[in-house]
Structures are given as C-alpha cells and as structure tokens.
Length: 480
Image 1 (cartoon, rainbow, N blue to C red):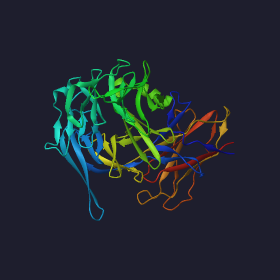
Image 2: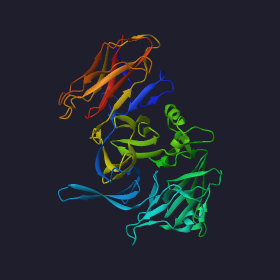
Image 3: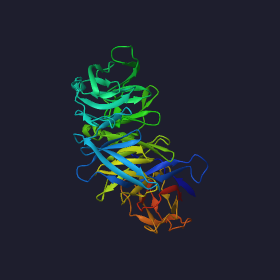
Image 4: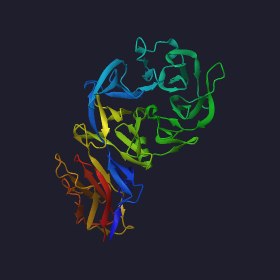
C-alpha cells in the first residue's frame, strides 16, 4: 500500500523532537490553487547575485530604503545611493555613490516625504538627505529635535516626520521639513504609561508601540496645538524588537507580547493582535536573550504569488508566507558554516529585490532563477512530520520523492538528492543519494528501496545543495 508523505507543513521543530522534528530550510511550501499532480509542493528559496559593493572592510549593511523608486543603503558609516544607468541596447550599469557619514554601528530607521530622506540612529543622531537642497546631506542640529528625549525610530505621516524618544514621548517635525522641530510638538501614549518603543504607520494612523501596549493616533488638526489625537484603538500588546515592526499585506507585524509574556510574532487584525508564530518558534525566541530579541529585524517582499515576511533574531531567520500561512527557515553557508540568512535589509527597486549584506558591503539581487548565494551552494533540507501507524511497527519497502527531474546543467550534469531517516527524531542514519536527472532526463525517478522496519515511528529527511532548479512535488511511501 502506498501512502502520501506530507512534505509541505513548513518548519516546526518541537521542544521535544519525537513530537515533531519538522525542518524546512531554504524551501518554502506552495499550495497549488488548481488541480495538479500534488496540491502541496515545495519550491526552493531564491539565490543571490552581487550587483555592486561598497567595500569589504567595516561595511556591514545597517538598513535600506527606496525614495521615489531610488534605493539608498546605509553600509558601515556611509549613506549610499545605488544608481542604475540603462544603455540604448538595454545593458545596465550599477553604481554606488557615498552621500554622507552616519555614526554608529547598529541598525537604523529611515523614512521620506518624497523630497527629504531621514536616517535616524537609535538614541544617537538624525540626518536628512535632500538632493534638491544646496547642501544635500545635513545632520539635524535643531535643539528642539532632542527636547523631548533622544529620538529612537522614525516614520512619515501626513506631511510630518514622527519620532519616538526614550522619555515616554513621541514628537513631530515641522510640516514637510525634517530639519525643523518645535519642542511643544510632542505627545505621549496616554492609556498606559509604559516605555514607548517605536512607531509604525498603517491605514493613515500612527501606532505608537510601547513595551507592553500599543495605541493609535490620527491626524485631526483643530487649527492650533498638536495635530494628532487618540483614535480609541488600544491594545495590550507591546513591541520587544523595534526594527521588526513592518507593514505587510494589509496588516502590520512585530515581535512582541504583553505583560509577563514571552516573545512571539503578532499580526494586527481588525482592532487587536493575533499571534501567528507557532509554539516551536515561540520556544526558540523565548530562549534568546533580551538583547538578542531587541536587536531582531524584519523584511518583506513578494515573489511568484508568495508574500513573505521574515524575522531575523540572533542566529535564526524565520519566514512567514502570508498566502499559505506557513513558516520556513532560511540559512546561509558562510565560511563552511550554516548561519542565519545573510540578508540584513531588503528593498524593491528597478524591478528587483535588492539586499544588503551581513558580512560586507555587497549589494545583491534575489533571483529565483539563481541557485547559489554569491557563488556558494544553498543547503536545502526538509524533514517530514513523524510517520507512524497508530503506534504499531511499520515496514517501508520503498520511498519515492517526486521532483522536477532532468534539471541538470553544464555545472552539475547529474545533480543528486539524499535521504536519511530517524527512529527518534534526534539521530539520523547515513545518507543515501539518488539522481535528480541529467539534462533532459525528465522521467527520472528518485526512489529509495529497503528502508527497514520501524518499531514506533520514523522521520524522513531529504537534503539537496546542487545549484539546479529545486522543486519537490510530492512524497510517497510503500508500507507493509
């Protein structure tokens, strides 16, 4: 008898591995929206090519932003504009131009009003880049900029730059001028006096997240005084990681929680928050230090019908597909080691998904038709849910993985995929490899025979790293 092996549940490594040791690294689940060979499949995550670099010494990316469809990157202590010139024959030439010096070494927040670009170093200094000004790059020196505390994170709404500070207040700039500030233009989160963390703009409201709560404000000018008023949206969830606040697919998300709660990923729904992270992810986040959580950051982009929102904390990158509502992990191979995904920030421009790097000043492009990261192979792993027979022993004479075969190329004329198995979810047997099909060998089948008898349950794990098109269509096992 043949039975299906579920392959597209996504990442779920339980605190107790015998319960579930489901790994999904550098694959993402895809649900077919019409009748097909299989309704749930796996596609490989994209590779990356380098387009330009700002250098290899002290040039780690700290943030990126697109203003008027032009991308800007903060790499090391520099603000760079990433330019593109298209020749008459369609040839593209890319360039990086240093615009100014940004102090500090951690992540920055960035916002623009269409003319001015603000770069804010949390607890440090603020800068404005305006290409139309006589002096395009300036530090914000208005004394009232810090009158309500040290600015931490910035957004733009209704003509104003808004910043949260370290003194339980948030403040706004003069209208359409990030260089000008008034000490009286401030407010506080009034429903609960917790520490203010960071702002986010959503549906023309500004949400001020605190350490334990979130409160919304809207622009309702009355002719004098502070133009933003409370909009009666108050939620008992706060933000633990300010750079994870992100708008995505008609909502916004963050790593946070309420009073005495451990960190989790929350999504704003209606007028409240809903937890979208699994208990497996929550368990990992709760094991990280408060400092590691506070330094976490997020990214979002769409690709081929999927809509990804990713969260990097410490040495983990977890990615949520809003469409399938399933999670996967991303990892990079750097210096022979498997580390968290190397992308530090992401921005869409020039019809591309551009990424800043955690290792140096390279600016790359994500591309699903590229099967390496800057020339390094991508290690892809899928471990299935426990395969059981109501507690009875089970014998598995054969296992077949249906893949898109015949994807060999000149670099890998005969790509391979391997399988190993576990009887406890913790330790795995030796790997056995099968061909994925040479160039044009479209009917090649990947079958593993004589897999043995399992007294209670087993987990099947498949590994693949050759730089060829990665698609897993379904898995099936013959049982006896």
